[in-house]
Length: 89
Image 1 (cartoon, rainbow, N blue to C red):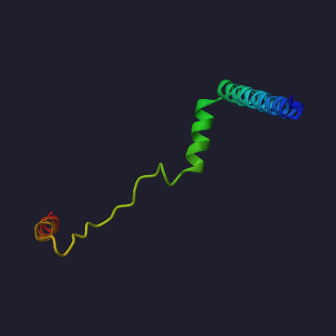
Image 2: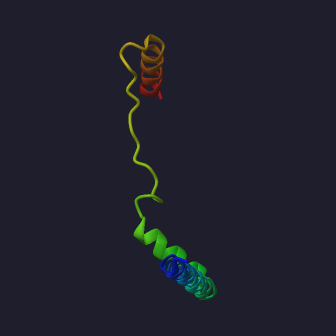
Image 3: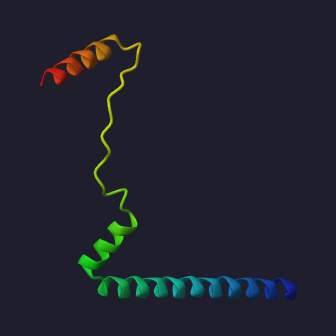
């Protein structure tokens, strides 16, 4: 009877079970942190902080002038037509 095999098998099983417990404990900690942050959320303050951090994302875009591709004949013609009408206004 090979006792060494059973010793190694029991050690491997123990390591596997311990790792599983560590994963479950880490998941519980993450869930409790998410729960705590969710319950302590302050909508107006959090929204303002987020918008201040990402101001460029929520700002109005800068205007740009349409520049059609030279090979696109229809777009070039429409561009010049609209440009001439805008000068008349």
